[in-house]
Image (cartoon, rainbow, N blue to C red; front, side, top):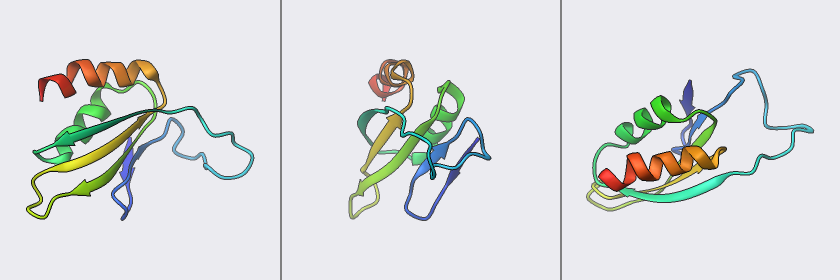
Length: 92
């Protein structure tokens, strides 16, 4: 399941009750910068359906015409990152 906040971040947590604060260690993340020209929801839906572990999606930039969007996607799993690149990003 995912949730978004006002900053444009998209998060999926393995345990919805967990908190990122306290003594929890930060997880290693594998990032990719991705530019899309369609709806960001298509990217979010694909990530929800295909990622096995947590991911974070951040909108880095949107052009003045709201057409080109630059996204930073951070994956907990390097395998999820590779699947995204090979199955989604290369076909877009």
